[in-house]
Amino acid sequence: MKNVYMDYAATTFVKPEVLEEMLPYFTEKFGNPSSFYEVSRITSKAIDDSRAKVAKAINAQTSEIYFTGGGSEADNWAIKGIASAYKNKGNHIITSKIEHHAVLHTCEYLEKQGYEVTYLDVDSEGFVNPEDVRNAITDKTILVSIMFANNEIGTIEPIKEIGAICREKKVLFHTDAVQAIGNIPVDVEDMNIDLLSLAGHKIYGPKGIGALYIKKGIRIHNLIHGGGQERGRRAGTENIASIVGIAKAIELATENLEEHMNKMTNLRNRLFEGLLKLPHTTVNGPMGDKRLPGNVNVKFRFIEGEGILLSLDFEGISASSGSACTSGSLDPSHVLLAIGICHERAHGSLRLTLGDSTTQEDVDYVIETVPPIIERLRKMSPLWDDYNKKGEV
Ligand SMILES: *Cc1c(COP(=O)(O)O)cnc(C)c1O
Image 1 (cartoon, rainbow, N blue to C red):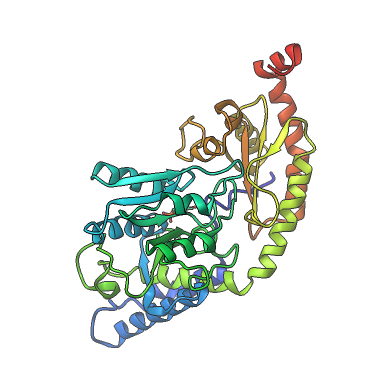
Image 2: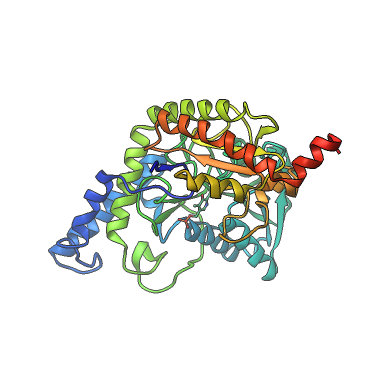
């Protein structure tokens, strides 16, 4: 049977070159980096080298990179750590309505602790307006957190402009760049970024490892207390193999970035072109170079995404729908609702995210497979029936 994986925004496989670099750190190179003998010097050097690789990929200094237990932890640490360290300055945080839950739920938690959070609206393509950020800043604002690129609809936010406004207003700026790293250029210096989150398993590295970039001089409180690892800022014996893995993954991803972007953009455009030939089918998110190269998200009117996913799964295609990513939830995605799509239409959305193993043949297979599924599901849909009897209501 066909096996076409098109859910790279959910997770990626680990590249063989990455795994190969990781393996010795499970067996012969197992020393605790905090100890004082040769086997621990080997692991502590591996961590230093990895930190330098991650720093280089985003144009940071090595000392500004801290390893975490994933993207969610990096987001939690950035927001809770800054909120706590700067609470004497103010209690106001600005974010957007389309952030990942690792940011949104952290902000909701802080609201319960007495912080005030502004959730900025986005436009119909998912863009945050930098002027809205400027207008939301008050003398109590301590942090702005806006994602670099959206995981559902691929919108690439005007990060450099938002960063410049935060610098001007002397407010710290955090960005969740989990989907951006390895897919588009990221430069913390040029883009005025103070804190940046990234994760291993979205860039062909292992799961359960991430990093937070913290610009030199920024005060932040710890999320994890304990030993003195990560220069006293993140306790716990280091996940050395995964640290080596995320560093190798980010190195490979940034080395081949342009080639990867061109390949993904071409495949994405071909897939869009094929799918948009279907009647009553439209794009979610922007088109062109302000969209993540490998992200396709379309809505098919009069049907439910769950039905599409089941049928696609039956044909060997792994994709994701317009429902919240928590499995079993039938709530429409908060991102699709925020760009102004109503519940019914949000449900009929399909996200296909492309990656390293995706071929033109895969894209063509999806283009052939989807139309008869949509046709069949519409035939069973009371909404479609209504539309044909009464026209647009
Ligand atoms: C996947 C993802 C996260 C969470 O990262 P984990 O490593 O799975 O915790 C955060 N933000 C975005 C935008 C993501 O896509």
